[in-house]
Image (cartoon, rainbow, N blue to C red; front, side):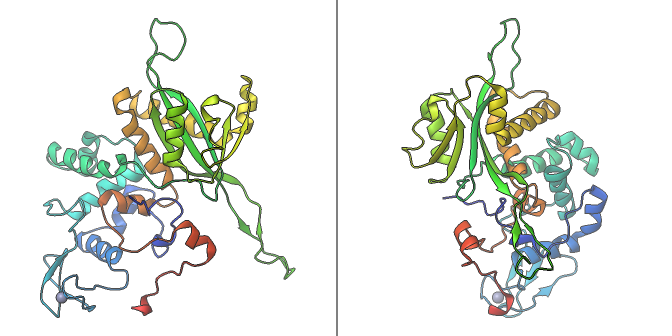
Length: 351
Ligand SMILES: [Zn+2]
């Protein structure tokens, strides 16, 4: 099974990092040269200090001034490349350019084109920019596969996306059917109180969208909807839908199914499934605004990119590492570990 330990629930990984910059100049200040980029790569890979992958010895390596991406073991003298296994492996393009390009891809401008990127970063050849963008986007269009829900209730609904109808009257011609699911999470504020009994007690907070999943489906039939739910939502989750018959067996399939029959009343639907409707509305704005509509054959790739950004919106360093293929090599906690208290954050002194 593929895991996406850079998605929303796994927050510890970047706790040591400074705030992700909001502008390209700010980002360039953080990564001004090849040494800064290499140091980041090294820190992500060996948060507790370099350990030689050949002989296992943990010791400050030899460094070569002119080749900052190469570390040499003091014990066995073998060299380790920092870019091995990342999208930058064997590249002749400077790491800074990769980093800046990755920043543009994950943070600044959704749907950045190769031409825009070539100009923004002053890259000489269009082909270089095109290939970099292609490699960076590959990580975003791969679907997130971990089931969502679990301890969080999930709203599920369908919508129609894209495709203009010309001269065929109103309706849904040429539009794709998209089914979506969103987790409902609640922000918890820790109470500051003079009453010692009330100190540190979490108060009820604002409900916000957790992780999402979006899939193109051939129709609104039961088979398609049940397939989406069983693939994407953890068994036993509370799932909320409207009264559509395609969802009627979710209880039998092992979900805690809550539904309300809408009787065609939009206000009722809005009140019962507000979060997924908000997700759909923002998705459509993004597709229309950035891509001026999307052809049906490419729609799923765009949905995956949207889901990728959305699920990492609070943790841009995770998105950044993910598109660059920088594996963190640290095991993230699972939901159960995280909330049962079994998860112990790795401690450098343990090794
Ligand atoms: Zn060694």
